[in-house]
Image (cartoon, rainbow, N blue to C red):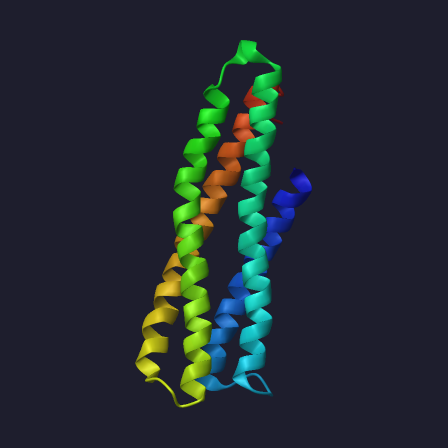
Length: 158
C-alpha cells in the first residue's frame, strides 16, 4: 500500500511537470523536435499516473471490503467511508484526464493548422485548474484511506 501511495505522489508530480512542459512548449517552443512527440510522451505519463491513482483506490476499497467481510464484528462503516472517498475523488480525476487528452489533441491540431489557438488556451488553463483540484482531492483521499486502514486494523499512527 505504501509503495503505491508514494509512487502515486511521485507520478503526480511528474505529470504536473509534464503538464507545465506542454504549456511551455506551446508558448515558447522548448522541445527540440515536434510538439506532438512531447505531447505523446507526457500523455503516457499523465494517463499512467491517473490510472495508478484510481486503481490504488479500487484496490484499497476491495481490500477494505474483504477485511470487513472477514471481520463482521466491525461492521461496514469503513467500507462506506472508502466509498465516500471515491465519490469525491473520481469526478475531478476523470475530468482532468479528459481535459488533458482534449488539450493534447487540440495542441496537435493547432500545430497542424486545423483549429484556432484559442481552443488550446481555454482547455490548457481548464486542465491546469482541474489538475490542481484533482491533486488536492487525491491528497485528501490518500489521507482518508490511510486513516480508514489504520482505524480498521487498530494500528497506532506514529
